[in-house]
Image 1: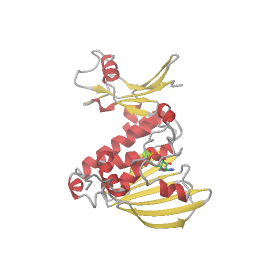
Image 2 (image 1 turned 90 degrees about the vertical axis):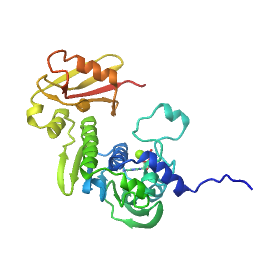
Image 3 (image 1 turned 90 degrees about the horizontal axis):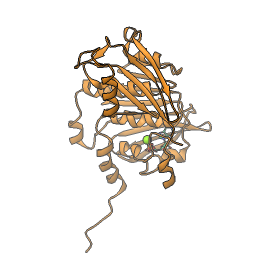
Image 4 (image 1 turned 180 degrees about the vertical axis):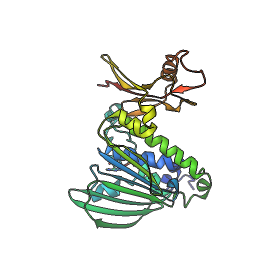
Amino acid sequence: MSKIKVMDEILANKIAAGEVIERCSSIVKELVENSIDAKSSKIKIDLIDSGVTEIKVTDDGVGMDEGDALLAFQRHATSKLLSEVDLFNINSLGFRGEALPSIASVSEVSLKTCFDNVGTFILIKGGKLIKKESSDARKGTEITVRKLFYNTPARLKHLSSLYTELAHITDFINKIALSYPSISFILTNDGKTLLNTDGRGNLLKVINSIYGVDVTKKMIEVRNNDDEYDVYGYISMPEVTKSNRNHIITIVNGRVVKNQEINKCINDSYHTYKPDDRYPIVILNIEVDTS
Ligand SMILES: Nc1ncnc2c1ncn2[C@@H]1O[C@H](COP(=O)(O)OP(=O)(O)O)[C@@H](O)[C@H]1O
Ligand SMILES: [Mg+2]
């Protein structure tokens, strides 16, 4: 008798969730990146208890029709990558079609979306479709994730303190807001607003929303370009420093990247103007021509 069996989709998604979703911020990341890929101009993230009780992401993007809304929760279902050729020309943040099915397999997800003025509501729990009905036709998509890890107690136990979960989320949203000044981001936790950017495309204003006016006054604009690279951003004067490197933020084609060489180069350029154990605030957008 053969011993090998193909596992059912819900189980496969639950296992994949182990890789895609580590903590609340992983869910926020996947949902917000989907909203960006959906060409949203305004993205609102509302948390209850740092996301442990509820994460709600509302956008004004392209939305989905009923068929796509259902498909979105199937493994490897994506609108962003259709052929192998596309793999070498990815312009979206997601492409694997794994996030939504993974999230839905370890939580309760409700989705309200709209396309062509027809609204759809879907409720999925533990990967199973519980409800599907028509809904009001508000532009965009609203996804709410509740009861995270309710069916994987070991992972639930491993969530950090509310303080740490929130710190990870804030860090991610701050960086994504700096990467996309033309999108308005609003982050709230238990009804309290933690970040609100206006989406008017002004990077310095985003810096102001995150670091405050005193830091903003001491930021210097930098700009340079050649045939391959377009570099634009702000660096802090040497008297404005932080105790760690986390505020040296380099963004390549809309993605925050950590590159030790670039970081070292930036840090070294401050020479002896700042103490060795202090680090500048730097936000550098690097556009690379990939065509
Ligand atoms: N906020 C959203 N607005 C519009 N479409 C969305 C949104 N979120 C997800 N989708 C659709 O659902 C699909 C699956 O999403 P996901 O599981 O994150 O995979 P991926 O982002 O890798 O394609 C996306 O390709 C997209 O078509
Ligand atoms: Mg995605």
